[in-house]
Length: 134
Image (cartoon, rainbow, N blue to C red):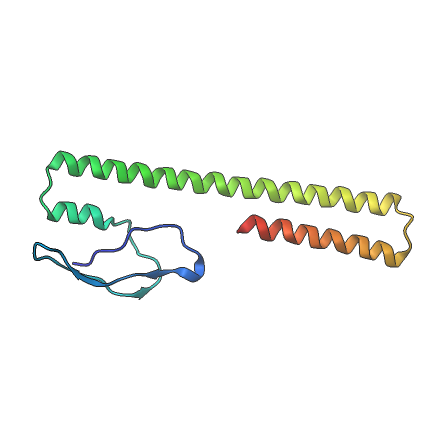
């Protein structure tokens, strides 16, 4: 059998399953392989090890319950985080719309200065979107 390392948030460039071979002091050998991509399942190697170590069934059930609860919290956090990003983007776009409308309707700047002024809007909106994604 193969034990996968615990899943954590990763960047798209850092999707690699870390693997190694080690031996436990009581004679068990764990083998890991390095593969491209994220693990396909939600396997927790600590829970698998606890099962192999013949821990009491109630301790294993509690460990699985806690692991599932933590995974649920992480999923919920990701959802809130995504909602927050969307709200920030909308706010930035509304601000841009207001700035462009005001520049169009009320600007007395010469063309060159107006273009420079509007270019700053582009820089600001780009920063808002880029920093929001990190």
